[in-house]
Structures are given as C-alpha cells and as structure tokens.
Image (cartoon, rainbow, N blue to C red; front, side, top):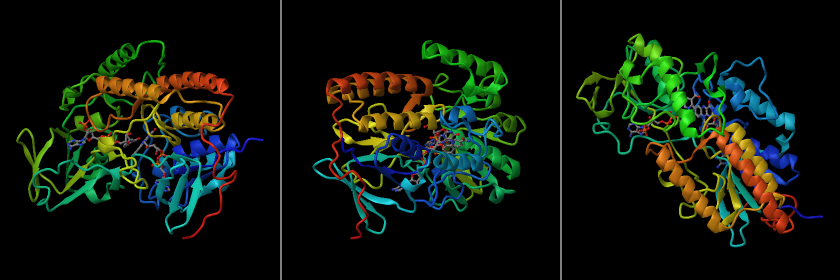
Length: 457
Ligand SMILES: Cc1cc2nc3c(=O)[nH]c(=O)nc-3n(C[C@H](O)[C@H](O)[C@H](O)COP(=O)(O)OP(=O)(O)OC[C@H]3O[C@@H](n4cnc5c(N)ncnc54)[C@H](O)[C@@H]3O)c2cc1C
Ligand SMILES: NC(=O)c1ccc[n+]([C@@H]2O[C@H](COP(=O)([O-])OP(=O)(O)OC[C@H]3O[C@@H](n4cnc5c(N)ncnc54)[C@H](OP(=O)(O)O)[C@@H]3O)[C@@H](O)[C@H]2O)c1
C-alpha cells in the first residue's frame, strides 16, 4: 500500500474548506489550521480573527447559483443574493455535510511556515507548538490586509475627522448627519457610499478612474447567470455585455461618474443595483480623485472642495503571507506568479487555493482547485516541466496585462467559465503524464502517514 503525503492547509475560509473537503474525500491525510473558532473567514461578521471585512448589511454580489459548491447547493429558500449570515451558515453546513470538521484545528493560527531542504514543512502555531507535513496548501484569503492610498494624500496627517479603510466599516450608524467622502470605484465603495447616503448629511463618491456599473439583474436574471459560452471569443461576449449594460443604464457619465478608460470586463466588475439610483436622487455626488485634505475638508482633483467629517478609503487589499519569511515568498504589488493560480514552479510541495479574482465567484473555482490538488497528491496528475510552467505563467501574465487596466487589483484575474474549462483540460493532460510515470507521487511521503501530534517548544 502506498504511503500518502501529509498536508497542512492554512485557513478554513470558503477556499480552505473546499480544499479540505477534496482531500478528505480522496482519503488523504491532512490538517486544516484556522485562526478563528469557526469556518467561513470573511463571511463571519465580527469574526474573532479580526480579518473579516463583512459589514452588517453585506449581501453577496455574485449570485447564489454561481457561488455555491457544485455538490452542495445553497437552500432554494435563499434569495438570489443572500445575506452574509446565510453565506456563513452555508459554509458551516458544508463542513458537517461532508464530515471533516475533526480535521480542522480551530483557534490555531500558523505564525511561521518554514520549508526544510528536503521540501517538507515545519509549521509553528501561535503558542509555539510545531508540526511537520509533506505538503503545504495556503488558503489564507486575500481580502483582509487593507491597502491604504499609497502614498497618503497630502494633508491626511492634519485631517481632524475620521479616516478609515473599508475593511473596518461595519454599519452606517456613525455616519448620521456627517459629511462623508468615500474613495474608490470597486464594490466596497458602491455599498458603503449607498449606506452612507441613507443617513449622512452629504456623501461624495471620489474616484481616480471610472467603472462600468454592472446591474445585479438583466432580463430578469442575475447578470452572472446569463448564458456565456466559452466557445465564443471573450472579446465578443464582453462587447455584447457592454451593449446590454449601456442599453440598461446608459453610460456612467450620464450620472456624473467618470467615463471608464477601458472596455467592459477590462476591470474587476463593479456590481451595484443601487448606486445609480442614489446618485440620481442627489444623495451621492460623484467626484474625481482626492487631491488633498485639510483639517475639516477634502479637495478633489478638479479643484472643488467640500467639508468632510469622515473619509472612507475603499482602496482594496494587499496579498500577504505573514507566516512566510519575506525572502522566501511575498507578493509585492499583489504580484505572485503561479501556474493556474495554484502551483509555484520549482516548489512541488507548495500550493495556493482561492488566490484568484474571478469575473464570477471564487468558491466553485476553489472547489476545482481542491479536486486538482487531491489528484496531484495521489500521483494521478503530474505537472508539466518547470520550463513549461514558467512559459505558461508568462503567457498568462501577458494576457492579463493586455486585457486589464493596469492596477494592483488586476494581478490574479481569471474568467470563471474559462478557468474551469482550462483546468479540466490541464487535468486530463496531467493524468496522461502521470500514467506515463506509473503514477509516482510528486510529493513523497516523508513525514509519516498520519500527522504527528503537536510538540510544544
Ligand atoms: C466585503 C467583501 C465582499 C465579498 N463578496 C464576494 C462575493 O459576493 N462573491 C465572491 O465570490 N467573493 C466575494 N468576496 C471575495 C472573498 O475573498 C471571498 O468571498 C471569500 O471570502 C474567499 O475565501 P477565502 O477562504 O479565500 O478567504 P477568507 O474568507 O479571507 O478566509 C481565510 C481564512 O484563513 C484563516 N487564516 C488566515 N491566516 C491564517 C493563519 N496564519 N493561520 C490560520 N488561519 C489563517 C482566516 O482566519 C480565515 O478564516 C468579497 C470580499 C469582500 C472583502
Ligand atoms: N457586496 C459584495 O459582494 C462586495 C462588497 C465589497 C467588496 N466585494 C469584493 O471584495 C473585493 C475587494 O473590493 P474593494 O472594492 O474593497 O477593492 P478593489 O476592488 O480593489 O477596488 C479598489 C478601488 O480603489 C481604487 N484605488 C486604489 N488605490 C487608490 C488610490 N491611491 N487613489 C484612488 N483610488 C484608489 C481602485 O482604483 P483603480 O481601479 O484605479 O486601481 C479601485 O477603484 C472584490 O473582490 C470585490 O468584488 C464584494
């Protein structure tokens, strides 16, 4: 009987549990380490790990049927765009349905992950206990380390009001009767500007770049469920979608928003069914980028100036791995070169799950990555040569640079359907490579068939 490699998964958010479920079903030995006392990561409002960006009124913006795992549908009683409490409950139920809760080590944050010369891993938990594994799967999420404007705006050090990042926004109670400036054109900015507009004296939505505002529904269906063939070239599909959006809402400029400097789908989608309505009511005033702040004011790049009590920076997130030594692995400017967003060339015992930003939901893609990893760890899939991996990464990077607006938010983009089709094809090719080598294990079992008990230092 073959001894299988042991695996550690860092994180039990939706990506970590997708990987854990795949390994569990494939009979692979693993432990999943979770800093919090529960699964669900970002979707647990007020998560005690301090990493959730969920606000009280957060609803998903990818629709229910797009977000659910393929073999565990969300309850039909859920609406098309459920509330965060429903999403967190769904992930919790997933773990019990597939029965792998025992493999999750809750309240066990990994502080250091060190790779030994033989490729195995030594993980150090908070508190000092260490464990060793053959394989490391990183699923620590990429929407928790707030990216503030870089560099800070002139005068931000003298502004006497509140400056905060969207990550720390919970609800609009503190905005009542305040003058509020919200910066950004992503989904955080849309939601927070709308919430602010319900209670604030004034809400200004500042942006350095325009965006196509995607409605939640088109033709009575959630927009992300409209038929989308991977046979039709993407540029044609997205031209059609742009036309639909133009017919539905008109151009963003019509509402006083900046004209997008790109075509539809050349930026991560900004989805909102409410922002244009609030702008059209005069409850939100579009502005260009912030130029400077004073003690109680914000000036914009067109020279206009407003009184401000609160500035909310909805300026995105940094991809970070605090448990790796920076000279081992980091993602400067959110760049990290991975084969199909999972494998690092030259390091067969390291993989990432959920580290991608789809036009669509992350969860089914993390599920597919988990199944891929299970095949890999069993020796049923073999990676191409290192040179081939690097060539594919270069091509992928080139495609992304050509397609997307240059921004730190567009470094790990994928198209939902195309990613799944390409991954299925790659798995078939890798299965053939594995067959040719007699299904040798790409990650040898060195640390023992079962994860060893924790050793306190
Ligand atoms: C406000 C907001 C709304 C969003 N809405 C959508 C949406 O509608 N649809 C969509 O597809 N995506 C959405 N996203 C993207 C979001 O990244 C995913 O929904 C999802 O949370 C990704 O899951 P994850 O498991 O990769 O990361 P997370 O949910 O961040 O989970 C990571 C987990 O890893 C754990 N962890 C991290 N570091 C360690 C460590 N060192 N040791 C142990 N445990 C660790 C954390 O405690 C956490 O539980 C949204 C993001 C934000 C910020
Ligand atoms: N309801 C929901 O489901 C929901 C709600 C919130 C967030 N989310 C998800 O959470 C993730 C993060 O979204 P996000 O909106 O927080 O971040 P984001 O998508 O990265 O958007 C950041 C925005 O800030 C702008 N920006 C960054 N730095 C700036 C600077 N220095 N000056 C001016 N503008 C700056 C960016 O402009 P450029 O484009 O020019 O870089 C962009 O408009 C996304 O996946 C999103 O879909 C979902």
